[in-house]
Length: 252
Image (spheres, rainbow, N blue to C red):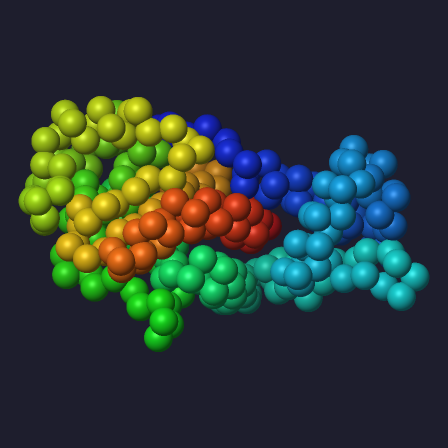
């Protein structure tokens, strides 16, 4: 199975942030922003924004003299024994922040061993999660999560998945024709969020953006009640812009 996704803005942000973080880590006694700019080749405005994100995430700290050193979060993710727990906690904090930013329930999903897994979710009283009335693993053809994950596979990977999961009609809007679905997946631009407009469940709209780290296929998604459908595209764009910290956490 091969991947079929191109890099988008969040990936470039995560790559640049990782470059800055690696440079800070190499200078154990601290490094100034001027030195960071020289080592990384990043402009002042870009570097300032990345350092702000890295400080917020706890990956770097600024000393009294203005120099930067690695922070506690970086140390936790670098620990072999605590990495899984630390990563899950870091990702959950990012998801919670995104939930509050977009005003919607937010999900993180992965495609592992040929199946869809919703690994983490951030919801709340004002942002309830979608009712999983049909197992997401069987509804890739109908959900934004599923279509985003399938869209990151090559044609053989998509066909393999669909051969194992019947394309059931969940609502009157569900695509049940494999040729139509494959055509739409192929036409989906990497930079445009995948939408689910009541295809999985009546009364719910969703959007998903890819979040692929290395060879792992994943996505971020959100769900809204249909009465908030007018906010969907703006919320999806916000979700996409907020993907960089999660990508960075997965890359460390």
